[in-house]
Image (tube, rainbow, N blue to C red; front, top):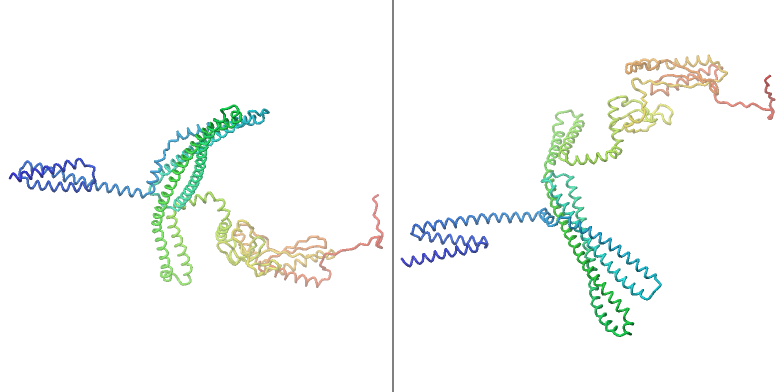
Length: 624
């Protein structure tokens, strides 16, 4: 019994020791801690099974519950840690997280860099003024007549000028470093604002895709330019470092040279001979120390510029990565959006094929198949256009904006086609001329044989023939002529038009007899045409409410140069104007042959002889 008691106490001590060690090592790995808790639970369960004392059993039971609760907490915390790690890994895969981290790493407080820029600008102006003054003094010394101390003064001014130049370079480089820092801050602020204004899950449109590609191209160009600038600054740094190394080497040599010259100047003779060299070396050493400090400042400023540009390049690279990732996501959503319109268009095409091939032959007669298929095609095209318009609505809004800006160019480019299309509506709606009518448009006369959507086709008549017969040529005129040209219709409401025939007789011809003959011939030859024209005039009066004209033969006389001209006015069908005129001409010729007193006149010349040519003398009568 005592042996069991001792074993039990040993186990208790072991468990307590394990618990104390676990409390002391609370920061160890979760896996090892979980294994240790499992071991403690097993040991506690063993002790609980072996303990017979009720009080101890209650204590070990409570210990067991605490250990089990600790194990559950540890498992929950491990699960949360795994989720957090997975989330961190996923976030690291997103370029936007890297971009935001890079933006946050940039100090956006512009106060100090702005103050540095103002201070450096003031120092640069002062140094430039100082250099101008030193250069002015040097020129004055060079122009002086005394040459005793001219060389020493000139050497000192040269050294001073070189020191001022190095100081000016240092301040200029510091100014560039401050500008680079300000530029980095400005770009970080721009990117931060763009990230804040970034829409959550924006609609994938062609406009947005084009904008993303344009941004990627711009940022890639900025990245390349910044990389080139870094290369230039690194080359400048190498030059400054090389110059600094030479200056440091020169300082060491000057120290040795001054030590040697110092020994030579101890005597009077040595002083007189070595004094200029000693003075020049001592002066150079004095100003060389200033130049070393300026070169060190240049090197520090170049390093700061390189650091700012390197950070800016990394910022651009991460922005490009983010934009590419965003573009890939937009392309994926855009492809998903294409499924619905592509399926709709395919369904419309399938329905159209079924309708045109299967249903249409059952619904309409064979001679109307072409018209039915054409109308079905128009309907299918309209439906597909509506589907595509709904899908590309956002893109069409931007196109509409662009078209609104470029409306003048669009109108100029399409005005002829639009005018022709509108002219077709006017022609069809007004019906002032249709197929078969004879018209004259822009001095082109012909019969209409076709009226299409954009153009009207004429069969040309007259022209070089001089008679109302077809020439064999086809005239194609855009329908916009209804807005731009005068249109003469020979056959609107009735087909009769007026014509005239000029007959000239000599002055010796009896006027009354000639006029009576011509009027009789005109009445007899055009009796039927005038009767038909009077019937057609009623259609004109019904259409417009006013009479067309008085349809009867007319003859007018005109005294011309070669005789008396009689103008015969008649009517004829527009297709037989030339034939009617020819018939009247032939009748007049026959009538004039029967009466010798009726003579046709023609242009003649009369020569009156004068006295110089053997003619009769002519005297002018004098007034009393």
